[in-house]
Image (tube, helix red, strand yellow):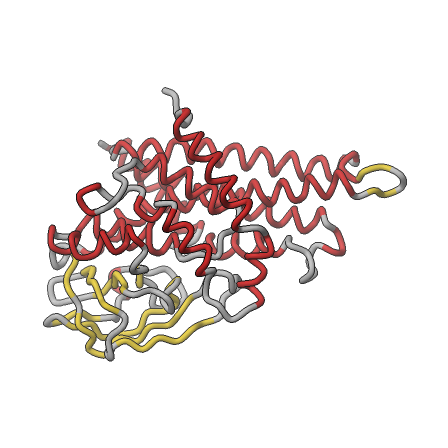
Length: 370
């Protein structure tokens, strides 16, 4: 089986790399990190104009109707440049939730706006520290209204609507909530990576509309996680490659005792180990992209494999990048902090490594029992 991308998809990659190299250099990330802006609005509009937010949205809803293979390519390149954008929240999560569970009316109302970038969506699932479970949900849906607190919500401060995970008399539900109504109070919260904004959202009887059938919300959420995990994994692999390349370029140009530090065995071992982890993660991501694009029954295994491998690769490469830079790598002036911050942030988005390891074991056991 050939998991490689096609010539057309590699052309898309080249186009994306050229575009992002010009429009999202490290200084763009630093500007958001140092400043008060929640994200790079100029870059966001250019990404929208490129049609990336419309990639997998069907043509009947003003999308491009492309496959998840094209979206995987875009995800990797956005991760490679550490783009300070709400792309993952709006595309991997909000758009996917509506595509999977929305009625025809909900799709007609929201998908064209998501495709055009007129609105930004997000997923409001977490409520506190620790592993989210259906039994721990306190946010409640009743009679068309949502009450409770979600924290932290990625891009919750800039999103126009949220897909909210809540409990109800019928069981867990997903609900669409317009965040620009009086019943929604938002407060920015600080995270390790300020280039990706987060918020606490308090719902006080906010008007809400069910997404899918009542009582099926938890199953829908797990399916959404599996689909998003593949795309997050590609983003992480792109970032891991950036961290490795930063370390390599510095090691080749930094001299100690008359020779590049890249020639010393200790540095070689660090970079070689990072390369192996990145390559392994990429292999798992290919499997995930295939499973996602074909809607394969193997998606739970493929998604968990890609997610675990990508978390490990990104963190290792980001950490060793700082170590390779020695006593300067940890300072604010160096860009080593960008992939490190992003690696830690993405390692807990939609569940930590430990959670996805459990998912992987459960998926393999279910597959063997079938």
